Image (tube, rainbow, N blue to C red; front, side, top):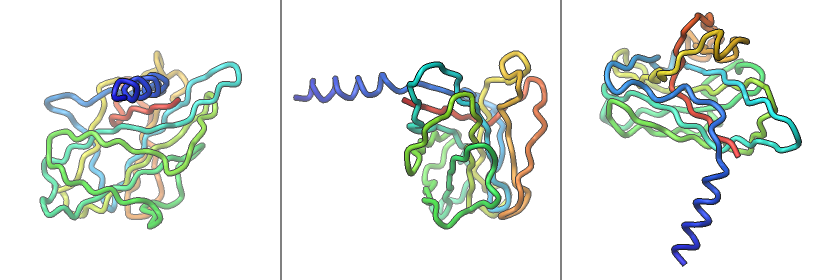
Length: 191
């Protein structure tokens, strides 16, 4: 019976594919963007082009935070959201699940599942946003940059972007897509 369960699990896992990957952060010296009540961070990623009728459904994303300097009172949390064709007009929605940050470490990889199925339209851009309730400078989670660089060679349409808010609930500002840029570590999985 255990063998059958393992085979079913392996078959399901083999159908999941990576559709975007900015790679894991550096083991040492990783940099990134602080996430706080006043600064949310977002990454735009393109869905793959494809022919035929096969749909891709977003299964989950992985992203990596640095949490070494966060408070150890377990009061810190983050929220994550997915958006099609544009950034949200507000942040820190009370309707979103608050995911606690309890692990204090150089690197912690979190896995987030969409609250309802998201069918990825071919050759379409999506945003993944992360918000936090952190307030104290130098005590914030850091969304660590992945090690893959994006340039006109692998992103000619400049679809891989990063955006930030400058204040709580503030408007989003998209960073200029410079050549050989890094974006926060993000892996997007679909089936």
